[in-house]
Amino acid sequence: MTAQGAGHTAGLIDSHCHLDHFSNEELPQLLDRAREAGLDGMVTIGTRLSRQHEQKALTRHSRPDLAIWCSIGTHPDHVDEEETPEAARIAELSDEPEVVAIGESGLDYFHGAAEIRPLQQASFRAHIHAARLTGLPLVIHARQADDDVAAILEDETETRGAFPFLLHCFASGPDLARRALALGGYLSFSGIATFPKSSELRDIARTVPHDRLLVETDSPYLAPAPKRGKRNEPSYVAFTAATVADTVGLEPSAFAGVTTANFHRLFTKARRPAP
Image (cartoon, rainbow, N blue to C red; front, side):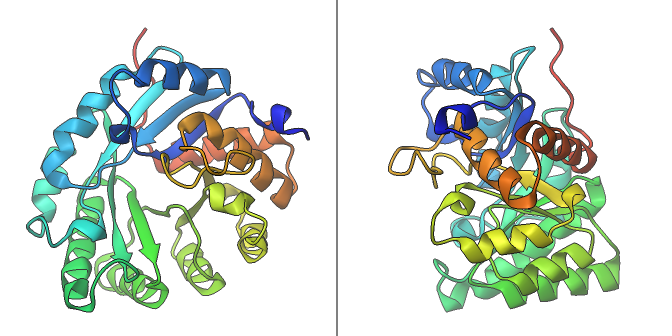
């Protein structure tokens, strides 16, 4: 498939982007390009619970042919800037139609100093509890913390019960993938999967059941080939989708159908805006 052909696949959903990194002036054209690339919707992801109003406001840019939903939560990189959230408070703030997920939360031992790891872990568990309270999927960030992420997921599931979750922008090792899938989790692949040196990641993608796959941009970060070096945006999810589809042996249109069905199975609250 040519790069031009890969840039459009009807029916895709960008399960993870950060629209708050774009200005209000940029959004109309950004959303136009998303529709031109074939997108049906996107989720703008919260990184600070204190700014949850900003994420909710961004969903007002939804169009009848392009849905925008949001998640709310505190990213592990910001746990030392905010109070550890109460699960009940997260659940209360998520009780609005546009909020379809909790997070992103998780563990980041690359950026996070060792002394804030207990804060990251406490915040992670609070977000897990909120996901359990609400039934909304938890969007999980994992970076250089595979063993602890897996251990907390297993402990929480064993001691307090299962909850829906998604390991976003998956770039971890096969052990975390295996353990997450065993718990019923989903994996989402970003532009990293298109990088020439990501052959191990593509090998992992081949092991993921088709009904647990999602796709995302994590924009404005991690633009996929052939857009590397540019600021990423939701329309570029079509390039990632084309690569992952080829990796797992699906035609792009079939991959779009599968991943969108998976999205709605996991993000059960996601509904299209009224005309």
